[in-house]
Amino acid sequence: MLKCTPLLIGLSLSGCAVQEKLTLGVEDPCASLQNIVADYNSGFSSYRGKASTFQSITVFRAKEQIISGHCEIWEWANEDSAYMCSSTAPNEDVAKAMYDKSIDSVARCIGNTWTQEAEAERIRDGEAAGVATRFSAQEAGKPGIAVHRVDYRRDNSVYIYIGPTSRRDHF
Image (cartoon, rainbow, N blue to C red; front, side):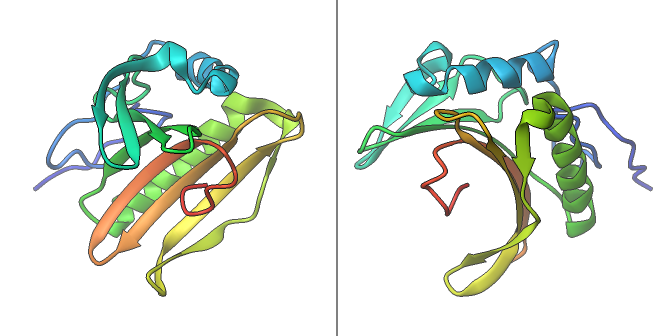
């Protein structure tokens, strides 16, 4: 029998590591999150690693991986960028636990100068596709931060997005 034990991963994500173990890629995830947010206006240039270029997007491996092996920087053709970390979950219960822990961790890390919006339903192709909790800075020029729990066609995953609030699909 597989025993689920909380694991300190990413931004304190927890759950069962069925297919792979998630681990922190940094010693202090809160300091890393704050530094990544601070680098937003440069398009996360300090954090860009190896690039893969596609038709309308370039995906960079993030040099600093809050969740080891699961973080990227996306730069769209119009040159706005986002830092994202994602992880799949073996089932909805684990995804819910990861999502709740991630929201709590992000809220603790960014402090009370950010506004946490109420959880909102995600829609994809006209279908319910999970939920998202968004954080907005009171200070101008800061990115939005969102934690998403994707539940779409048997896909259970959680991702954290740091980037422009105009990308409502992601933010």
